[in-house]
Length: 420
Image (cartoon, rainbow, N blue to C red; front, top):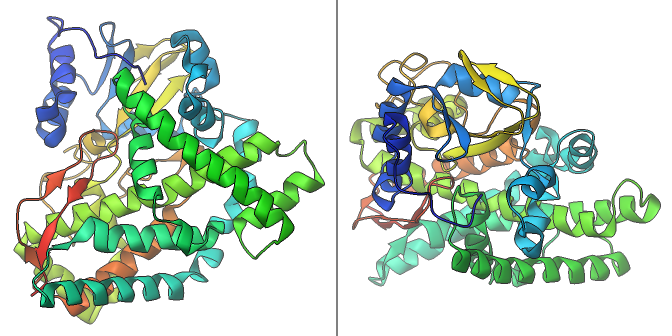
């Protein structure tokens, strides 16, 4: 991430497409831009933008799973973004799991991985189902009284934030301000952010860090059956495995990333299905006759309009991807949304097809940095799809959805719907 906007476009056609992608117009619908960039260069090293950019599926897989690439962390920021340590947000996020390569990545991920394995996640399914039913009841009441029904604020966020709160150990009564805080902080993953937006994000994330610092002290006195208590026990038993600051940073990152992206995918899914009546009908058929096939359905929905459109890696040594040399230290942006619409991997890639077989999209990543919460996200999607469309099979848009600015996190701010 940089804190300044890129310079005006250079004559290079690939650079011109990249500059267009980062405009508000390009971000609203990036898929045509991905296609044009992929046709010019599936892998492009840009001197103007100071990094490499990947839109091809095979090339994306090579970067995400390759041993010559790691995540961007403190080492890269020290070299390329002087002054970054003045930002509480950047220091917390990129000094923790999001910015860790081995051996720190293995150490930190290992501390939280057990809480996110399939067996542990299944234990929270009844609670997720309960949250979904409560949200749907409240939405129905709003509709009956003539109020606006909105998917992100009234369904997606209550379900996903409530579920991760139960896993981590955040009391439900404390959740009120977290959506605003995390939304402001989510600019941390964008390619370019204005200094004033970063300042707002720093202020918001400072609240998050302060909250978890206080909650650690409270839970140390009164432990529970949750991830927070488990990490405190590790910290108190062996400070070499987890420092006090790492504990707070890890909790803040896991909690924030544990609801924002899945809430975005739920919103994207509602809009995609409302815009494709034939696929809405296909979903109804799956729900009625073969609900066990929801897994491939969720894969296709994530491929078509995932809430994470890009992720960043760094070349740990000189590498060659698709015949293009990427020098050591190069920041490498993988456009997951572009790879997920690569026609060499997905026939008719711009078509939503819930019967698509063997999709294997990349919206959850790949390799050692594969999304820690993938199983949780799938469970939440299953519960929401079953219950939302079980109750409201004819759900439709009641107005134009409003996109949240940004490209890396690709989601809607509001989605007004009519339930029946």
